[in-house]
Length: 449
Length: 85
Image 1: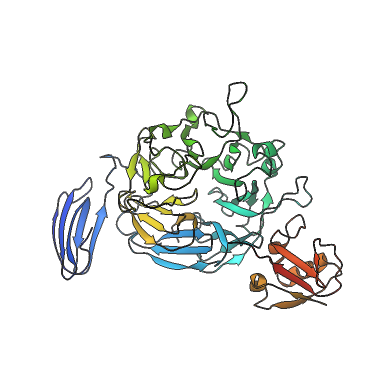
Image 2: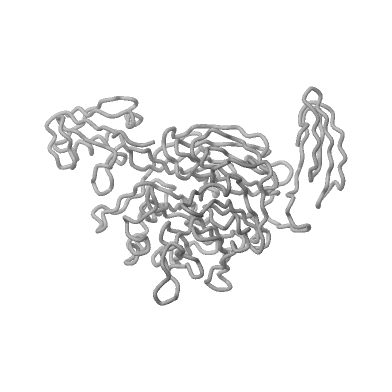
């Protein structure tokens, strides 16, 4: 939309109020130029600012989801952008203009930084440098100041002599356990803190499971910078019900707070291995890149795997359905991240990448796009308005696509080329809110107290 | 007391000091004393299996020490290797 700023605005707005609104605004800006735009929303003109409350272009008419929605005045939205060279924090009260604060932990590889949604004040960040061992940093003031707290560690003298190379994933624990956190590490291990990161205990039911070495293909056969434990999920109905993903190794479930585990990979392709001799399926060894659980429908899981996009409804069985089959063939269903709508369990966003030939891991054809589904994966819609039309050879890693709780939902992603993109209308339009950052390793959204 | 020389990477733990003093008969004991005086530093260079991390080197009296059991006979120098990107 052009024509924001000083000038006079001629606007025709239809259908003010709740519902689907089609507005047509013709804006002429003195000294700048002429802007013509078609928007969905309500235009509110002032002397210095033109603001739009937008509705996403692809939302089904009449689709409304009650719950934590923010309309009108919003609190602060905080984006924690963890990169290969430090952490940057972006804050906005309107999701249009963003203030930047950083770098924090400058020079450190920050794999994940998460603001605790329970107290909305405590921040944990997983950091290391190219030379030094891993640390967990904690802030008690929404990321303003940080101190080093405990580092997850395998038991000294354990048979496999494992040592944590880096903490890859941080998950706040259940809402009823306010200081609990989980850390997923490389090499693959799971650790739990009861004191907001001050100290960590190994979840030995996983780390020392007799089959764990098999699950992870052995400690030597891993992704280039080490195997990952990720997608540590806590069932909001039951703090003892946990999931986690292993790259590589597959997806696993524990019903008893981590004491026992079982693989949960039925229906998921494993194209990088020869078919099992018995013609069946491998129970584990898969490579889930990112798995998300819907907070309003915890029996629904979404999975972006090395070998496709899947959905699993636990209340209907334990076999994943490859919803990526509905993606355009020329795009495919390979990618790293998947992000969910905070209220609509049928809605999800993915960022496909080129998983052909030698796996370039870039946007297909150099034309980046988010794809969204509103029907539980039966169909996918390309969303690329505002993104580069061509010659953009980046991708979005598994922790780098995130949604906020707004209405419309805000969608954010960081790229391997150091850009931060945002959409305040569920992906209908994107705008770059930062460029020239280091390689982005994670983007998380918080709402500070 | 043993003089311990630190690379720039670790000086955030010593208020910028490039060298500190610590006590101990072995490299492991010296680094334990360093940790007591400057909490949080040891985990950056020694892993939980008491191994010196891959991109860190320790020298005792000018000789590379590959294990914490090496007796301390002179100055300890910790170096962050030329790696990264």
